[in-house]
Length: 417
Ligand SMILES: [Fe+2]
Image 1 (cartoon, rainbow, N blue to C red):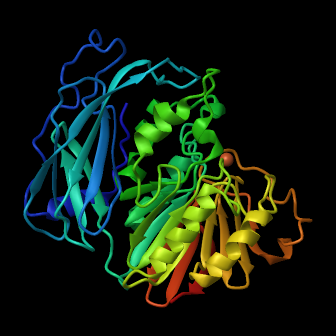
Image 2 (cartoon, rainbow, N blue to C red):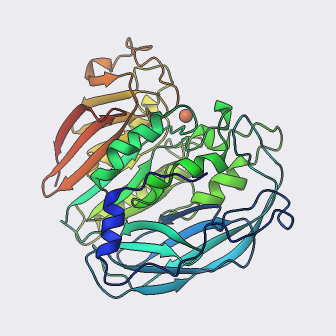
């Protein structure tokens, strides 16, 4: 089963490059299941996706179910230019147990093979189309970091659950074709706890997002929701294996990404983020470093569990109060949060906070805690599936919350340096 929706933009952009795609290989290379010990009939079992992008380099990552598949990535600027080729490093990874769930595609125990291709010498502020030698049908793209002051476009989504109905898939149909440099995920990337989902099924359904631009995940509580008992090692077996090394200057759980003079910082809300914590110290250091960087404009903070919400989850006003002076000092005008399954926007003095947790998990009660003291600052909200499209231009951030039917449910602008 393969996802059939491929953004026309991607296909046409690839066609516009001066060279054809990578060497074609059949999707089914005639492999049987005997060697792997589980069904293994696709040359590429998961991916590809792109992490750790800066102005001149990027990592292309994918998984195969057996060793020795072609290791090359072919790529060229979408606007035209020479086609280049990079070779991946293959590494074996042992998954320790099978998780079937009610998914049509279990996550099988066994040895899987990760591939990382480091693309270097790229041109800044340039979008590339790429393909894999291992599967000539795959077409994907990413953009290198923009030059300071250039327009930056990104998609933000949280709490995806593509196996649960069609909500995630419908959101992507209406947002991915709008185009973006990278997709930010607010965490709870995959839900074993929804009973219907496995990572194998997730990867069958999410190529539209993964192939539209680089992926920048935040870590949520469900990114370690292992159903199989102790030890709970979903984080190591899946989350870290797939999304580790996403950004810079931090760790897998908290890191920074810079494009266009805008720094994006994420922290892991399963770990402490208040004053005195490792993550707080890192935020303080990273924001100071960002502010001292040539071309610095401002920073955007994104995290899973919300600082503020009037919906049916907890909040963390203490952490916000402690981080607020840093946000003011180092110019952080926007916080993107998730976890509460719905949409919210708060306007506080100098700081906009949005909750974009309607990425596909069951929508919950967005009004369960409207008595919280700050809820008068909530200026928009709703119990709907959605993702957000952001555009950063000189002097302004523009944002739209777009639902699974393609309707714009909220939009706002925020003046920025
Ligand atoms: Fe969550």
